[in-house]
Length: 85
Image (cartoon, rainbow, N blue to C red; front, side):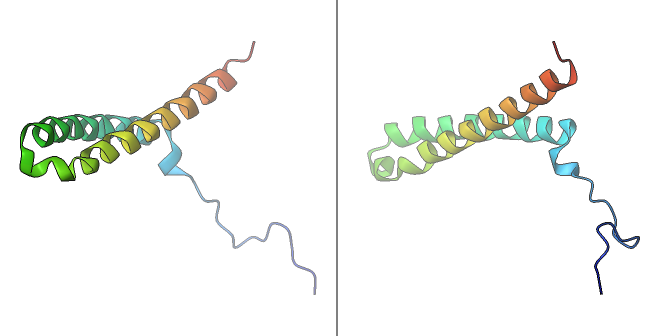
């Protein structure tokens, strides 16, 4: 029996997590995470007992920044595709 390429019972999955509003919310949230990480770096570098744990806020800032850049590039590409030429 052959499978139909588009059966009737399948629903279309709407990628709400990739909408412009969701991307902007994530960027704003990650901006606050980056600020929190910078505060952690400042506190960790001032207190000698916490200097061995300085890698945690540095990693937090680095990964959050990478995700912000990735989402921003995705939004810019989407915007440029909308208005060709």
